[in-house]
Length: 219
Image (tube, rainbow, N blue to C red; front, top):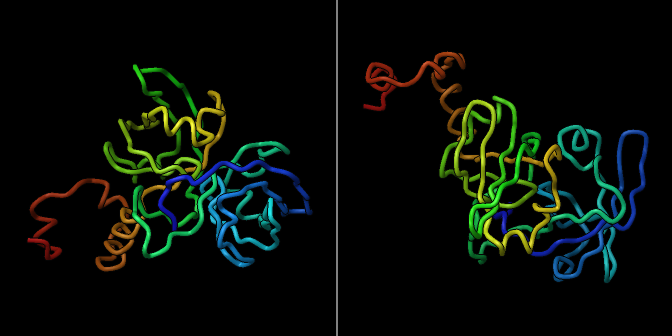
């Protein structure tokens, strides 16, 4: 589990490509402290297992499924990445709970300035937008952020100068892809509703009313 509070940015030192997989070696410093082979490090929001490490870098294996679902296959040598070690139970939860399992990709539509903040508009697919709500939480490349607005095509977030400085988000340009992880609580609630009531998705999408709530034991 992770919190979406980035500890440092690292850089890709080496990329070794297999037929359908990739081995990445990532230069870092802070996240190497107290880390051992077998531990997890969130890399641009993706939970990856450390398979090798030295005093200046760690290496991870990336399988085909991860490459299909994330933006990792767009990285090149020298690319900066957001890094976070796995959450300890004694840590403050400054962001929100993340699994490091990316739901899908978004594409940056526009980046604008609003006084001290940078507002980023991101297009994504309806199957992800269903879990994104205004003032809710979203992870973008592993960064825990608050949703400013959402519509049927896109959502927006606003970042403060500190976030811009300590993450890679403003390395991106319009048209670039970002990894998205939506709120896990929303996904579990939806799954439990379907499992308990055996309801098709279209019934949920039609909205809740007093009859539905009564029939299903909520009132």
